[in-house]
Image (cartoon, rainbow, N blue to C red):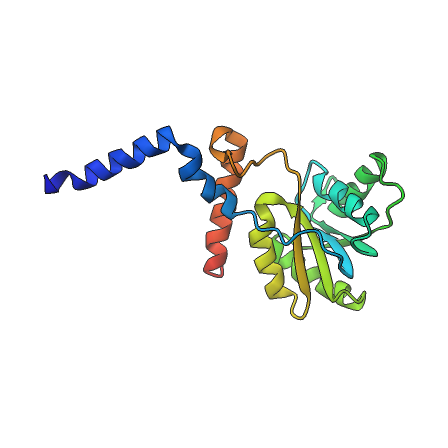
Length: 195
């Protein structure tokens, strides 16, 4: 009987996952999401990496609600010869946010760490002692931890934009959710080790 303990335990876990996936898998998906809430700050910053426009549109909504007087948009990376800030701002203006004074920050960042380091001097010079950071829900915990490290002396508040490619409560039900979950967990674990 002792021999089969591990097999019995493995079988029980498999049955639990099959019968109650939300109870077992849900906490893993929700761990990635850690928001500080919509709080007034000196500045707002939209992280790059959203091809659907959710982040930029959420920032426009927050700006109109008076959450920050300055709204910076990261322009990490180039797509067809344009930086992401230029593309995001154009998208927002075409979709009803022409009244929002976005400030583009083109940079050469290719990760949350390098992006944060690249824009830090500009945010400091602009008087940003507190920054409301807009990103996707799955990115809030890791991005918040990284930016608090690379932006010394700044209060960082994380808020998420609605995302179509991740549901933390049902990430195992759709392939696109599973891919986001796996990639973000991989990045989270490597960040723990400073990679």
